[in-house]
Length: 473
Ligand code: ARG
Image (cartoon, rainbow, N blue to C red; front, side):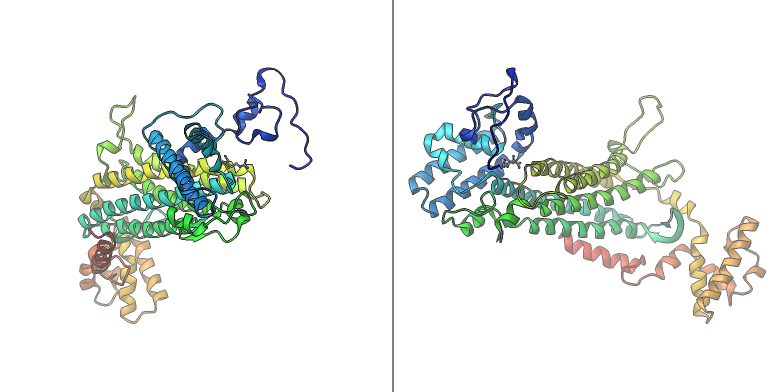
């Protein structure tokens, strides 16, 4: 900051070598090693090496167009950057302990290889617009690859839904048996929610679609830099309209983390159902052995660990969102070094979701519904609404119908029988009750719900057809 004195003297071996840093011109002293530990981000931002080098290559084209580099210089610089990229891709360890971050590391390696020309690369650029560019590129790519992973999960769900489209199960609210639904309908409920998750990922990618390069540290590059050309090379559809906004804000990263947290919550919901349904008490499903694990002590155990872990990861995904949000909420609106904290939550969300989506898709592929067991446990009480609806058809106002059926259910409970098995006298308020009682089955209930979006088999068929079109399978 202007007017600030020299950094205080660091005694003993806590002092780093003064020559190392690329920004060291105005400094007499090196960075304290404690401060280095706090400052160095290479251990995690090295993940951005591709984005960083591709960004630099596009930037070099921009510099050529601005007249800063000659065609020959551009050629040499691009060849140098390409080689660094290839070497890093090949797993060569080119980094040195003093490299502060990926941006400085790449520039150092390049300069060591191509000599003085390497020092021209950073013209009109700051790490502030550079890092925002790198992370936006990363978010955009990863959002796309996560979208593909969600589609793979949807494909697994679709296939299971086809397999169980006409098998019935209890539909639950409050974990109480509520109304019968087809298993296909239940499974497709995830398919449609995942469609919105994909849209959220796409939206986050679109929000990260404004290219920051040309913004410099905060005020914009002073060179006649061709931003459009650079953006086109990097696949950014837009240019950031304001250099402060471009370097200061991470709303797009938050949006991505928010989309990840919401997707994590959905995965957790389904994981919870599958955990519950694989208990001895429910015994509705069997997960493939490959997605379960045993107990080190109890030989009989087959635990649904895959689902428990996925459920657990939702906490981590929400944590990543709140972590960055908390960093951002009180910042002065410009680049602040705090923003270095933006990357790890983004990386973690990407990696966590990739593995969760893959395991969930495979585990669903392995899933067996124990349909006989499910049928055995379906409670006739789930047909109470259908009986009330029948009375409505016979002209009874719904509220009265609800009351009449409620009384029948009460009596049945007293006698510890199903309301379908009550003596005829208790069905006396139901017109043509004897005939209707026979008709009142779970399938009858489901088939009354062929309304668009309902559980009726016609509706499930329509959903499956739409899902098939979306997936292109
Ligand atoms: N490593 C930094 C980050 O991740 C790069 C930007 C540093 N900018 C600066 N002016 N010190 O945010």
